[in-house]
Length: 309
Length: 320
Figure (cartoon, rainbow over the protein chains, first blue to last red):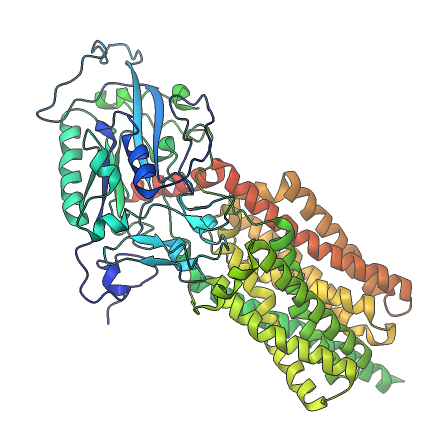
């Protein structure tokens, strides 16, 4: 018996641990935000394929982002951030589009060109998924592909998964009460197809495939960017030993995660569940003990009073 | 947005130190990182209060029965049945569609405090019901004794598991206090039940309730302080806004109730009633206050980002 723990730490094969006897390799998304052009084809493809209802047509004034965030009816969300920063070189074999004159290395610490960070966010399909752990009905389950999916016919609208998610992904649909989120196109995976968003992405910013392969590819890409002088390039959610045991959907970011609205150091809440149950047990015992003392004390004092009388 | 105000990082390549600490935290247009629970405060904070009142009340009822305080025993059994019934109603109401409730008992999952709690209530509810019905009707005394004992055994769990229900989330003000909240909830439940006993029981039977109220008020104060110490900057959410007002009111009401009960509860019936009501109101304010603090901490990205950024920075330093 190893000291491997199903609630935290490295878990190489979550699908097998969930009871799938011979699961296919775990699949995931690698979203390389350095090549995202903010076209929102992923958002549209996702809505179309999954027949997700419209969820508001408001104008936010936040750059070009009127989608605002992930939710019950938004399973891909493209974030837009405007910054004064040096430009990112294009990957090998691609043309650097001359949108602006490259003078980002201006001496004297002057700000670089205006840059846009664009990033398509999605459910992370965590190795240790808090939403799945806390779901009281078993509606959320681990698929054979290692992804996390809600079964609409079993969800009873309790809403527990919503505050449990450390990324703020899953949400209840207001008119319905049940929770919805990205399924990584479970239906398409079953038919050997890639998810709609990855299929629609014109720049291969969204890459789909076996997770091990994606992690290798991502490590190469981040090295390439560092060699090209993009010091801020970093991977997010790729480490199998992070607070959620690694994400099934991980990212290459060009700034700190919180700039994109992502938590800097997310931890699955159920990591601490054994501690919580232990303290709840102790608290229950102290409640019973405190009341026992409250009955014993007056009796003892009463005896004493009677004795002295 | 704070991006434009951030110090320029380009100098790093020239070997300059840019370890200027950020007073500001960064976020995506100030939007929350996690989603606040969509639970209605009346239903869920109300359930935390009622579940605590019922659970601790069953223990008080059993104690009163064992020590020959029959009026208090019967009153507390009825109170527990009423509060657990209202609890169930609140929980089903919060689901929106009552016909979806049976799915709650589809599986038993130890990783889901809500699943554990549903099964706990499924066992506790009927026991509390049988205890109350037999006590009031005077029939089937053996069944009544067994039900009273079962309810008293499950009661402490019903009163304290709700703390795990709240803290097993990504909500900073709840999860951050996951070690202290069970004791806080147990103390608050004891305060509510002893308040109810003071309110309903005759003065000559009220000695244990007065003693329990004083113990609970003290324990609640200690647990609240410990939770705030543990939470660090997130403890702001316990002191500010609606949560701050509710928790200040809770502290005042609980202290008033416990003191009134302890000093005057054995000779003055009106004083016992006032003390009992203050204790009940104090416990309700505690639960609604903790609930509001959780929602406030989820809605402001500061409370998610700042502690996690500090943790990430310290682990980066340890790695390098």
